[in-house]
Length: 153
Ligand code: NI
Image (cartoon, rainbow, N blue to C red; front, side, top):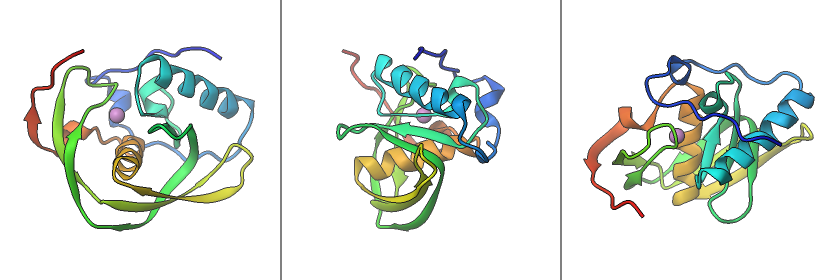
């Protein structure tokens, strides 16, 4: 495993639409492992492949319940609404309120190529939407309704 360089806002790789994964090969498995290590190293709750410069539909998320690996994730249902402060490892130091669904159902492949569904509520719904947005070249700052000051630890 290796920690990869996190691309920052302004890098055009963050504006590109990612291609689906067709074959889950060693490169994809290594990418998943590296993304998880990179996310933990940076104290993030999610990371999408374009953030490490790879234009593939791969996401890792851990909101405190262990890592979720999502290959070719798709939102298949969403409901409700929440408004909360969001940040992004690609946009250090900037935070803002974004309106997201309260609940989403996401279908994805796991590392074995098996399809599964995850039901996300609250923070997990927010993380799923945020990371899937990255796969379509959207960074959260484009959706912020109000930027906020957040005390740094
Ligand atoms: Ni992000």
